[in-house]
Amino acid sequence: MAYDESGRAARYRAVTTLLAVALIVLVGANLCIGSVLVPADHIPGILSGGAANSMESQVIWEIRLPRVLSAVLLGGALSLSGFLLQTFFNNPIADPFILGVSSGAKFIVALTMIVLLGANQAMSSPAMVAAAFLGSLITIGFVLLIARRISSMAMLIVAGVMVGYICSAATNFLIAFADDQSIVNLHNWSLGSFSGSSWDDIAVIAVVVITVSACVFAISKPLSAFQLGEAYAKSAGVNVERFRVVLVLLASMLSACVTAFAGPVSFVGIAVPHLVKSALKSSKPIRVIPACFLGGAIFCAGCDLIARTLFSPVELSISAVTAIFGAPVVIALMLKKRVR
Image (cartoon, rainbow, N blue to C red):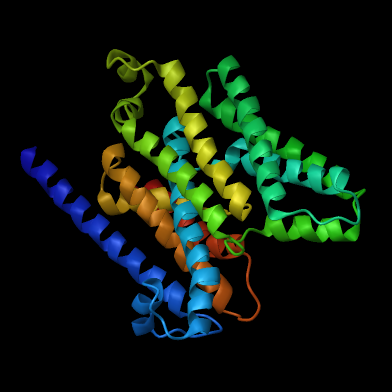
């Protein structure tokens, strides 16, 4: 038993080291590759503020670095949110958007853009972020109210899906009465993208994601007990009803942050936790949580690099790229589980 645990610990160290190295390489690739190629040996000088080439420095500091940091932080948040929801529902297909968070955010953004701002006014980025957060929090609150009334995890998933459908239907109703410019603005945001992040946005993202992620890591011990069933968790001293609410709140806050700043991003929350657990050969939260965050950061940084460079100057939707890579992973893992 001790040898088995020692082997798993060594595997965890190897996997997390590999993930950390891969993330550093991908961040570097994101900084170097684009319409303006920046040599790798110029990056240290640019980041230290001693670069001689002002154009390269401007590209890195104003465009690429905020974008890749956004992809890293939000990708990690989305993956971690998926792991929490899969644990909460004990369901491999649970996803951050299953609770209707993105649909709720989209509805409030549409409402603000179409009804409150008027036909000839553009909606600023801060206003869009505020509206998305409000919509996310309203949806979270509604689903939490439902969670207090029902005990079945399957029914709560269905309730979350129905909330999402209601919000989507309400959004479509608003769009029917919108002007063309409002429809275009809403459509661009709803496609999902890590572009356009300012340093002020990065500061907010970092505070929210790091704080919530630290809270998730802090509850890894009761989360491990919860994985073994509610009866075991109760015997271990976990207040299950309160803990369920905490899990939903933390997972939803992470996905709400993603939706507010990047729009809907699909399949990250489903695919990455499965890949990480398969690589670690373990589902212990104290090991999965850090690796899951790194895995989500790598997945989104890689997909964003493909989205902006594959058909440059045309940029693909980030959700289109994450779906292309994420959906086959989910199918393969489910087939593998079926064979076993």
